[in-house]
Amino acid sequence: ITERKRVERELLRTQTAIEKSQSAFFKLSSTGMVQSVNDYACHMLGYTREELVAMHVWDFDPDFPPEAWAPMWEQLRQTKVFNLESRHRRKDGTIFPIEVVGNFVSFEDEEFSFTFVWDISERKLAEQALLISTEQLNEAQRVARLGSWEWDAETDTPTWSKELCVILEVDPTKPVPKLSEQHTLYTAESMHRMTAAIDTSMRTGAPYEVEL
Image 1 (cartoon, rainbow, N blue to C red):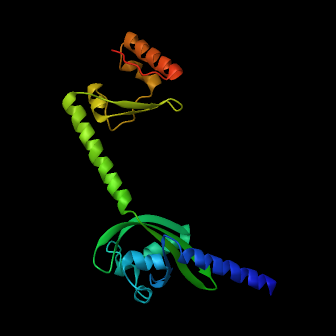
Image 2 (spheres, rainbow, N blue to C red):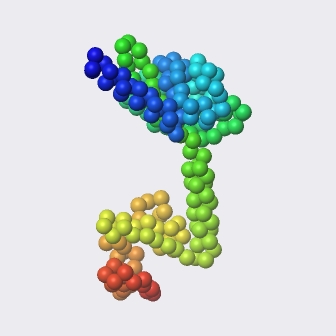
Image 3 (cartoon, one colour):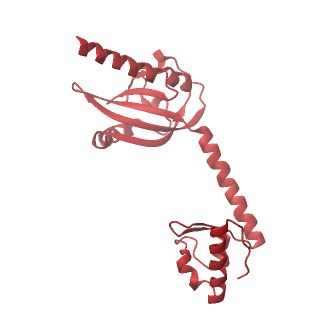
């Protein structure tokens, strides 16, 4: 009896955590039907719990057709977990990007998925803003014939801007040469001047300016 009570308490604690989670939770059957949800799933999609239960994934995911479910479920059986990005459609028709993590569960001859969903609208907006900013920087550097670079000293891994690749006539689709390999791009004097300036900067933390 004591063990049973302990298990019941653990189950209640888990159910409470899921119910109060700020992630949308869906228990999905092997046929793609919603069996249960938490409050946040209802809030995120704008449906009541009664409306969501017995719907199928493709009823609110415009990017997931019914015929895609069977192969996806078979893959989940093998991998036990999946992670993907998709979109969900709210009851009012608005569509928003989401990230999904599903976990395969088999219990007493029943197969289902514990699936957690996050609204990633803000992340996508940030990614888009970063892309626009990068494109603007690339265009400004192209016009000014100005390149930029970063260097991870621990791994000797440089990152070059697109315009720097153009200036140094390096294919931007190929890996950037490590600093130790860049002697082929400069004269011996220029390479010595640059490495000396970098060494001094790393020791003192002071910025440097050098003509090559």
